[in-house]
Length: 274
Image (cartoon, rainbow, N blue to C red):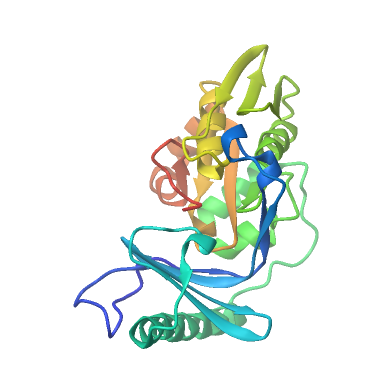
C-alpha cells in the first residue's frame, strides 16, 4: 500500500509509503560479500513499515510486547532503526497503524465480494492464462491462477529473504534455460549465461534483491525480458514475469495500455525491496 495519505501528526499534504510484512524473514550474513560476512543470521519479525524520507518507522510484536522503531536519518532496514520510547514518535507510528488497519478492512470487504476462480486450470498453456489476466484486469488472478509464492511455473516470486543465487536458478527453470546459472564466490554473485560471466559486487556490501534482479534482467536481454508485476505491490512477496522478448512485443500489440499498467521492466532504477 503506497502513498495512501497524510498522517495527523505529519506536515500537511505529506505523502508516505506504508507496507505490511506479514511473514518473518531472515538475512543470512554468511552469504554476504566478504567485508560484511559474519557467522550470523539476522531474523526479522513480521512488522508494519512506513516511511517518508528520510524518516523510517517500524512496529512489530516481539516476545509478546509491541516494539516501536524509528530513524530520522534514512536508515531503512529494520535493525538500523533504533527502538524508541518517545511519545511523539510512538503517536505518529500508531497513526500509521490505524490507517493501515482501516485500509485492510476495506480490502477484506472487497475480497469477500470478488469472484472466485474455480475449476481446473490448464497450466500447459501459460500464455493463454497471461492473456486472460491482462484482458480482464483482475489483480486477484495473479495470485489465484498464475500462482502464489509457492507456485513458480509461470511467475517468478521473490521475497525479501530470498537467496540471490536461487532467484537466478528459479528464473532459469521457469524459462527452461539451462545455460543460465548462478553462484556466490567470496566477494560477489556470479551469473553465467551461455558461457558469459556477469559479476555483481553489491554496493552496500550485503546481497541485495534489487541489484540481483537488475543484473539478471540485463543478462536475459535481448532475447528475454523480466518485468515486475505491479499488482503484487504491497505484498510480502514480489512477482516478476520473465518472457521471450517476442512474446512481450506480441502482448504489447494486443494490449498496449494494459501491459504498460500491469508490468514494469526491471532495471537498476526499479527499487522493490527498499
